[in-house]
Length: 187
Length: 98
Image (tube, rainbow over all chains, first blue to last red; front, side):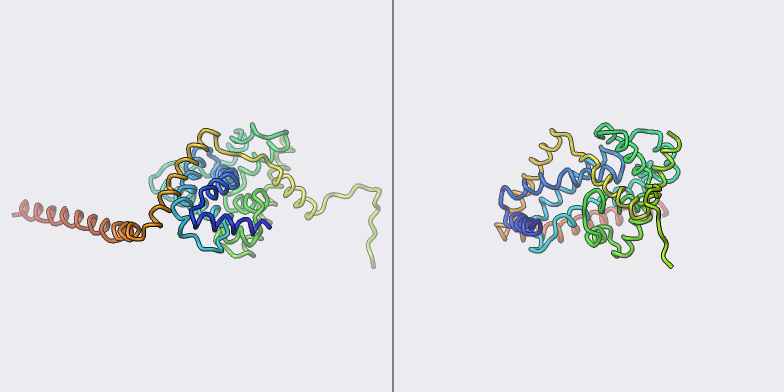
């Protein structure tokens, strides 16, 4: 059902149907922005990258293949843009926004930008712990557990094999669980 | 030999239960979105690009010209400019050396 709707939207994008772009934008915008924001930990950067994702979709729309999976396409573009940005930032010698092991201790103390949206303390702790998980594991958790992509779709987005993704997912869950346990102990 | 578990004693959660609980908690995280005004501005900007691309796709000659310009003319102009300044720099160095 979902896939039929996605195919219809892809067809609409290919043919330039005016409502198709708006429908895709409304349905996927929060997901793409949320993924980017939690991946890079910086809402401003996430907004910039998100803008680039939607402009790419708008300019590539007539050339989309009929069987394109929009979810995978959008998340792959978002991920590639983030990685590209990070590479350029590194080349320019700027401070990376990415949370590395070195900055984990600071990240654990500072509130994440999404904590104000959390309904309760448990969610706040989870956001904080998630922000502290190293990027490649956090990415797997975000794609599969938060955004609900299937492991094979997530593997396509991350450019790895499904088996590799499952390993990252398992490691990510362990790291997240450890971080939550540590936070519980310190509280 | 089978192992029996006394159900009256609370058992620690298994790995699978912890994973399932984590997955549920992650799926329930609040949706974050762009600021409403920024989202609307981006929608208008992207829609303009979308319409322009389709207008271009409807005119094959314009699309062909666009592609030739981007793939052939722009790189040629860039390479020509770079070559001009390179030749100029080499000539300047040669003159100074004499």
